[in-house]
Length: 243
Image 1 (tube, one colour):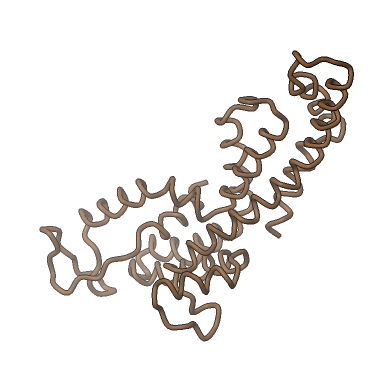
Image 2 (tube, one colour):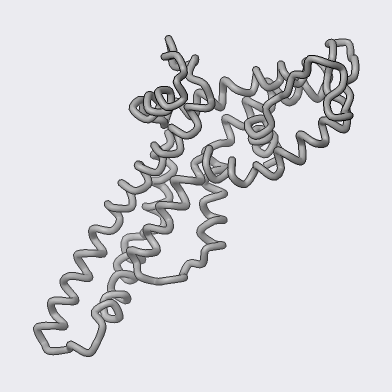
């Protein structure tokens, strides 16, 4: 968990380079590796990273796909607020931790450990932390979406995938994940929609106009979901979609 949070902090707190020895009253200090950030500036960057951490966690990890799919599943089941939002968010969070663990370990060993030992500077740590994260994002960001944001930012076309800037890669990953999660959600809806249609046609044919078909179909949908071990299938397929 600590390694994953540190990896996200590297995404949310890009290192600032200053031309002078002082920036807004916060000084830079000299170390054996050259000029490095002083303790006050490090505290400012850490607090900034912590405020950005929830947005980063929700947007640049498998959490985005997981939580959207789980909400689609709850809507398809018609259970309203069961499971609750806290349960779905917690489940999506642990799925994200499971998928991101190899990336977090790589960032921790390559970037944070040398920085903590004083072997590299903060800017070098950022440079070492970026490639594993960029590799993960490139795996799931569609080329069409990357091209869109490169054109919108008027950036030069990258010669190879590793040259794609993070400013274009991150939003491209977000909308790619949104499309993938909506596709999965649509597939999840279909079997439950068929049950709703069958129950609605039966209730209308027997003249049960006053009874909402949703009240009759809900137990059948829940029963079907339990019989096929739905949670195991959904979470298993969701995690495998990232490998």
